[in-house]
Image 1 (tube, rainbow, N blue to C red):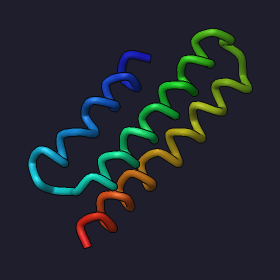
Image 2: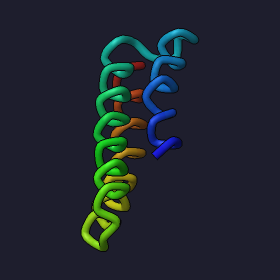
Image 3: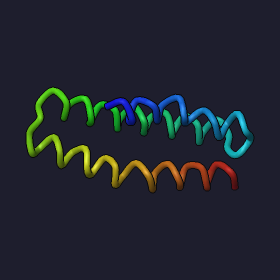
Length: 74
């Protein structure tokens, strides 16, 4: 859970450095929050279904964040 929680403030760094704009930052923060929620549910339940949810959340998180940063830069 700690690593997924760290993703939320890390989403602000591309905006402060100038790599992306506000839209990319908000998409990254939203994706980080959803990933943290999935990992928190897994922490609470500790079952196979929650583990699969975290796995698929990670599969969706990375391409979504990268596409948000790409399209926000264009």
